[in-house]
Structures are given as C-alpha cells and as structure tokens.
Amino acid sequence: MSDRFVLDTTKQNVEQLFKVSTERDDFFTPEFNISPGSLIPVVYENEGERKIYNFVWGLIPEDAEAETDGRENFEVALEDIEDDSWYGRCLTQRRCLIPANGFYKWKTSEKQNTPFYIRLLSNELTAFGGIFSVWESDSGRDVYSCAMLTTEANALVQPVGDRMPLLLHPDDYGLWLADDSFNKESVSDLKGYGITELAVNRVSEDVNDPSNNSADLIQPIPK
Image (cartoon, rainbow, N blue to C red; front, side):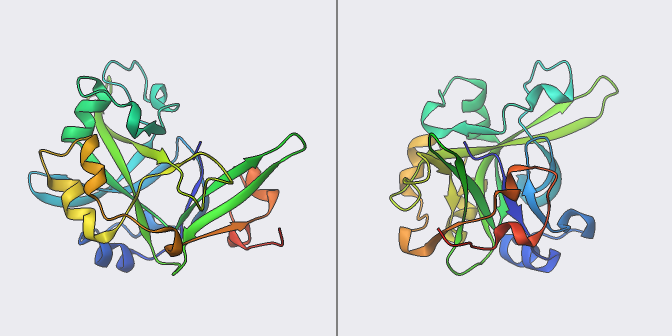
C-alpha cells in the first residue's frame, strides 16, 4: 500500500517540469504527509491543452452517491485493470500526473511497522502515473478525483514492501498524457527510473500520524 506521499516544491518548479501554467499559488503549500481524501495538484490534458487543478485523492465512481465514496480508491494496481472495466476506460481516456517528491512505505514485522521514505537520489521533483474521473454532484458541481497507479516494487523497494507507485520519467510525460492508444501493456515502453536513481531511507515513526506535517518527517534516521 502506498497511502502517503510528499509534495514540497514551488509553483515555478511545477510549471517548468510539467509545462503548465496556473495562477493558484495555494496549490503548492508544502505537504509532508499527504493522505487519501486530500486535495492534491494534478496535471492532466483536456482537448490537447495541459492543465493543473486540485483533485480529490480517491477516485470517485461513476455511480457514487457522495464525494466520499471514492476515498478507498486512492491506489489501483496496474496489473489488475481490465480493459472493459471503469478503471480500464480511465486508463485509456483519462490519465494524469501526480507531482510528488517521494512516498512512504512501511516495513512490516511481528514487532513493529517501520516507515521508510523513497525519493529520487537527486531529490528532484517527479510524478506518479495516475488515472482520473469527473463526477457530477447533486448540485451540478464537477468534482475531479484521481487514483495513483501501483506496480510491483523494484529490487530496491522490495525489502520494504512488494508494491510501489508507478514512477514516471519526464521523458514519458507527453506519452502518458496524450497517447490515445495507451493501455497497461504500454507501460513496458516507458523509460522509468533505475534502482540506482532512487534512495530509500528509514524515517521517524511520527509519520504514522497523518496529522503530523513537517519536514522532519523525511529526515533519515539510523537503521
């Protein structure tokens, strides 16, 4: 499970990396313990134009009765998506980029769950591959929501957990957002990141509490 991540960057960095423009500085308040149900800045494409907007993290189903019905859909295993399912249609038609600096994983043992923070070794901003949906509320308001896609963990992350977010390389952003023929088999064509480009660090158990939000949460501590 990948249910927490970090976004600590500037509007200018996001605009430069993702080639978008926004007047909303409030989208980029530093967040060091983002949890499902939060509003998060997401990059997507609409009629050939790349945009950024605050989405609910938790994909709201087409037949949902309430906005909160998507809270459990914060991550979707890429391998489990069926082409003819709702998830499959989102993957084909509505892919998005979720800007992030890194994500947390918990190594589970009989004695305790130990948190780790995984990031690019360069500390650069990156993005998770996601899918999104637009749900209309009873009042007629369009609510944008998204889910993070996950894949099997690579050799570096595997000792901590068997799943990880789909990390996309900047070279893949255009393909991910715009290719109408994209499906889950197309992921093998993506560049991605090698294990030598990532870092895994043990961090404080303070991250276990979603209400904690401080840069101290991502500071490495001795293993």
